[in-house]
Figure: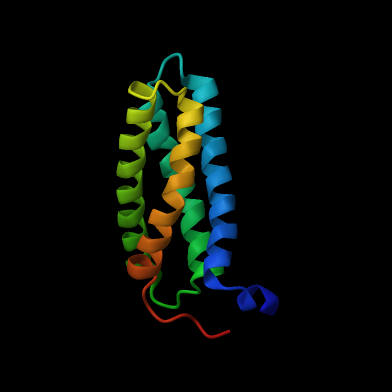
Length: 135
């Protein structure tokens, strides 16, 4: 595990974000394929977000930012950051599907990719701003 912590934080974030993005996209894709005939894709995106945020919090807290502060405060800030990202994502998803004529799965892939920079800035400067844990 020591070699993991030698990696730059931004690289750890990208690796963790890659996992989180794939996980969230698979949840959205699964929900979309199962329920899109009966449930609007934006509602499915919100449901997928709720599933993915729990996994993402743990990964970012322990494997990226090594946060040693009480988990409740960082969990609340994490959710606020994720809600901001969700709002951004829903607006972009709607715009790409409605005005850009993208299919929802392709639009979600674009939104997820663009959200990486936004989430890093929010998490590094707001969510896990405390001191890292000592090993």
